Image (cartoon, rainbow, N blue to C red; front, side):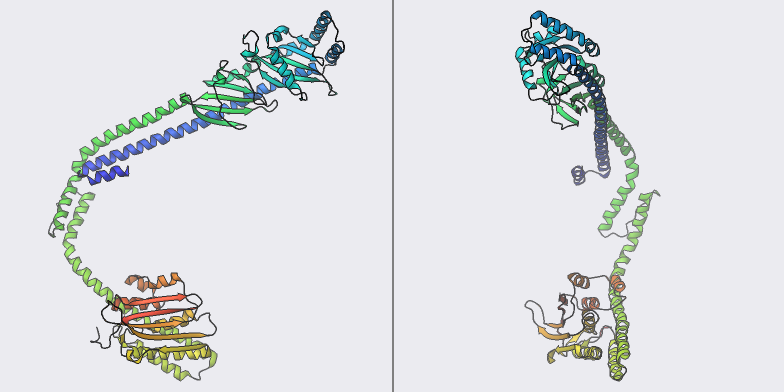
Amino acid sequence: MRAIINRLFHRRYNFSTKLILILVAVNLGISGITGLVTYRVHLRLFNEELSRQYGMQNQQILARLDSRIKDMYRITEYIIFNPMVKKLVSGQGENASASSYDRLLLENELEEQLRQVRLDAPEIVAIRIYDLNENMFNLGTYAGSFQQLDPVFLDETIEQLKGTSGEYIWRRIGEAQFQDYTYKNWVLAARLMRSSDLETYGAMLILFNTSLFEAYLKDLRKLGDTEAYLYDSNGALLYNSVEFGQEQDRILPSMGDRGDRIVEEDGGSYLYTKQISDKVHFELVSRASLGEVHHRSQLILKVAVISAIGSIILFWLIITIISRRLLSPLKSLVKAMTLVRTGKFDTRVDIRSSDELGFIGDRFNQMTEQIDTLIREVYQRELSEKEAELKAIQAQLNPHFLYNALGMFFWKFYGLGDEKSAQLVNSLSEMLHYSLEPARRLTTLRDELKQIDHYLSIQRERHKEVLTTEIEVPEELYDCQIIRLLIQPIVENAFVHAFRNKKNGHHLTIRGCRETVPGENGAFLVLDIQDNGCGMSEGTIRRILQPVSSMEHQESQREGIGLSSVVRRIELIHGQPYGIQITSIPDLGTKVRLRLPDKREWEGDKP
């Protein structure tokens, strides 16, 4: 979208055309995004709701099936724990030479014992019981059903029972397990026959009709195009709702113990849901097609696209009709601005409306009338602001220093009495007299250092033996002209801040030299003021050296004069390349270097 807008602005279209194209593009983008988001949200919400419904339905169906299979277990346990059944089966095993007639009588007697079982479990097709000598008894209405199954398949089932402790083994009977390859909807369950005293006396195979499962799983078909896959506790497939053989072509996705998952396969989206029964631990996996859901959701997207196209056409018609009336004053204003750019400040715009464009035109006319006056006023204002800022700094300097000096005298009188008051008052008087001179009247380095000496004499009375000072300035530099009260704020800053938390060992050094830099016109007067105080951080140094406007300077310096005033005064009076440089190491000290013009003669005081 951004690239399209940039391409439109760089081409030579008129404003109305650009406006129409931009609004059309924006409307198309908004409609497209809205439709896509609506489609995605609708699809996600519908999938979540469908997953929830399928999950609940599967859980209910599996719970009913689980209960029915548990009933089958209880019914077959009636056979296993029936003492008469055990007696008949065990007796047959002991009498291995019994005739066929005796076996027939025994089977009839077992049938009589199990008559109620057939009534309670019509899904049971047939039952075969093996004694410990592998003699078999076929029970049920269709007792000969086992004869249709492959003996090898039955022998494998009996073999799988070895090592079990009475739990059921379920096996699906495929087409290959029938001797005549005539597939029937049967499933086989088997378990060892153990009496209540845990004595194994035989094995039992039970043929179930798959109606045991179909009676419950058919409810899944009510939810649409759905397939069901039922697995036993070992993960073996027992039943599916599709035609026999199709499940071999279907590779089910991995889903963990429970949950649902949407899979893209066979050119469509399908919802897989997996549930595990609580009692017999059967797994039910259902596969539902989401094609109908997606088809309905795509209708929303199509409606959004159609709405966007309709909006584009409507926008185009509306903007085309009203653009001429609305944009005509704008064209006149653009033409007038072109004339003003050539220097024709007498250009005026014809105001024909009282709307926003008319307001702009009226302000344009006022602008052209005032622009020449403003050019002259801006120049005069810059000069006035520079002068006013310098005076404001000087006006702040005197009360600032006086406040700090009186504070020091207070502590002097309070702690030591007034033995040397005369000397201190004299030093203070000299300093006040010196500070009251006009701000733009430069002084000599000799006079400036003399005032520093007065200030240090006051500090020596306060700090006594803990303060040592050192001034090393060549005598040939004493006649250099410098800004009045330039060194004193830096020296004072050392006592106010650097030595504030230092109890002893205060040391202050002032050094001066003349420096010549290749490529620069003239020489520099370099003054270094160094202390061994607490130092300052890089952030504090940047804040001091950061240039500020005159109004900002007046507001930020209203509470005190310090290094920032020195920076600003050098900038106002001398400019580049002169200035101040600060280097500091926390807990070791700070060095302030002043680079000033090396002027030995002054041509007269500036007003």
